[in-house]
Length: 168
Length: 273
Image (cartoon, rainbow over all chains, first blue to last red; front, top):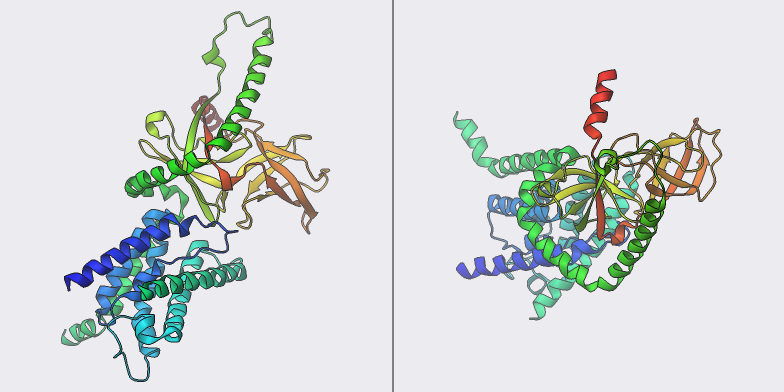
């Protein structure tokens, strides 16, 4: 139990650090802003109660907001992602249920499953985040392009980190 | 009563979600209105020290480039000083009271946080109330305008960058003096839009656009950018695209400008309204 808390605490700390120090500084034409800190929400145990997941998402979003000077934006988006996670997991459940391991990961459920799971959550998060940032429906398609490009990069970086984690 | 408790027990996750999302939206609504960016100041105390340290390292790695730009600015200033001190004053000015005539006060500051990829970009500067900074002061670089201070704490201040869709600035053609309003359309960090220029004015690509000094925030004649493209739209006005003089992607040192006569101007203007 204590071990799990420590493990996820460390993961949280590292992901926030990577996000704030590296990924927030990618200023590539304003269209590509990967947000890899979502991996923390993705990796939490399958057994976690939904209310606890909501509070964790809320806290994660708050921390991100403090660091990126955008009150409420990451909080709202990450909370939505945390709220959606149990439903996404139910829809994506493998044929023989979630028996292979306690955490959603590539090693337990395979690359294909993890890729779809990550893409869905990242897309939900990014749509909320980018539309909240613009906060108007003018330039709808330009914002959509930002959502899609950023999602592609977020998913790619999340899978990269996850497969590196798996190898260790 | 019992059924109410049943509903609460059944939908507790949804209720928690709605309450938390409500808090988040409240924060967002508050923060989105840029006047309330001052709220962030309280929260930023912790992260600013980290950002300061990151920025310090970043600056150290760029020292050569920074030195070059500083020495270039030095030369320009020296030249200007030479020009001013060589001039003999007008016959009526027997006492040289330098403070009496000074209208603007300059203060140099370093940028500790900056972004160009958002729709509402802000700069964080390392000078605050203790250095005499207050809201509505202008921020410029040696190249051109950079933004306006919207909030300040004791040691730091936050400026709204020109690259913010809420930013507006009164600017005019250097050649003929026609003035309009500059804003950013949220597309490219290198370009802004100049509107409200009537179509009978002759516009050329490459015309310099500078500030008007009507707002009592910016001094007169600070460069904003050059005309890079213009077209006659359906209405009475041009659609003019400006290439901004300031490169926001490599902003490091800025000057904060306070208007010493601002209170006097505003007092006079409210009197006549």
